[in-house]
Length: 224
Image (tube, rainbow, N blue to C red; front, side):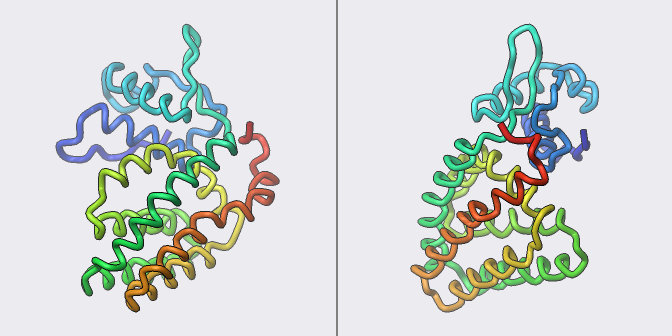
């Protein structure tokens, strides 16, 4: 498991949750992997309690399966849960993007554009990990512009099912389409075309449906 630096003032439970979540999304903890509370606690230099609490929260979104007396494992990819995560995110984020387009300042738009410029830079470097990181930051910024960060945290927990598929997509296809769609969203913000921004975000979030077959070919063992 890849260790992550603990943030200032971050609780042990939040640190454990963030670390486990990121390792699941980036496939360091692959679907089907058995995990041990004690092993994770030792690796993160924590007691078992915050790790236990983190796993319980992750199990509520069905990304972790807890087997009484046997341990826990990372769930295989269930496309029904992926579909539900995409539906939730698309429903909420489309409305928030429309709102953000109307509220965005010139500074906000400049920051979104700078993010996309960095995506293009790392596209040229073939650095999919940085593109994934910037992709997440791009969408988080939209929630911030709309002042809807509680919605962001709610969507983020469920969206872990979608995030794993996004990670796999980056390793099976050229991320150029992702970057180009982000550029189109920024252009809609510049034009203050809230309807276009909403339509673009819905198209952007639903695009993985067309990539599922290719992802399954490369990662067949990861699917339920």
